[in-house]
Image (tube, rainbow, N blue to C red; front, side):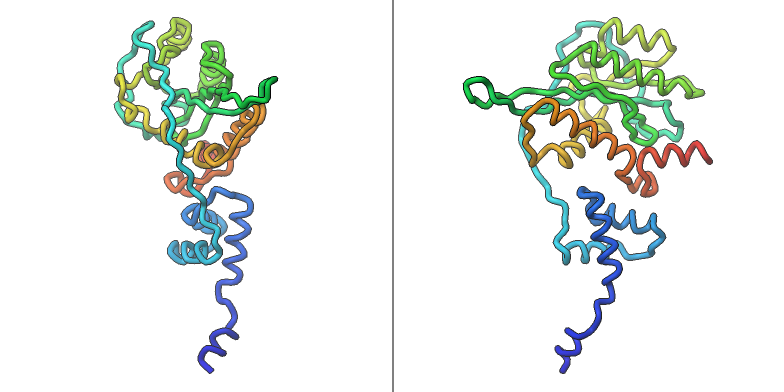
Length: 266
């Protein structure tokens, strides 16, 4: 009788499970923590461990992928002028557009040549991130490391951040592009401080390294791309998703864009 009553009992979490499934359907990369945050945004008070148990029960955990590959390095020695490290790992700020960081990351895709052979090709992403809310404010995508591509993204970032009332700081590593006369001059012309990580120290720009890790985990690892355009479109869609929909606990379970708009409205 005990087991019969147990099986006949209604599921007390039926509505919650359906909400969790709806959230997961719209956000395939949301683990239980972000699902919990989204439920809170919807006004539902629920225990985080309860959400974790339901996610496990429904079998909708996020799949993790790992891939060992050589990290792209844009460092070519001293080819121009380097700048001091003005950020000193002080990545947090409550002022939008005051502190900006950038870096370059490499992606691989495949193409078939005339002889039917699979050829590995590369794509390069150059994003500029606002450290206030971790929003990608501009970016460039190219098929090779390109000064033109980086300068185009830099000029867009300078224009977007021109509304900041305080003197801005643009941070990067010591890559060849950030030592270029054109790059240095563009920042000086707008009275923007230039900051660079110490040589060979990725922790001095860990926020951008973290972004690349999250991005590749969620849209690149475990996937195979067979053209430049296919990979480019996927990156563009992900950046839009990351800025507008991907909520963060540090931002009060808001997306980067939501957090910025909330700050401006305060």
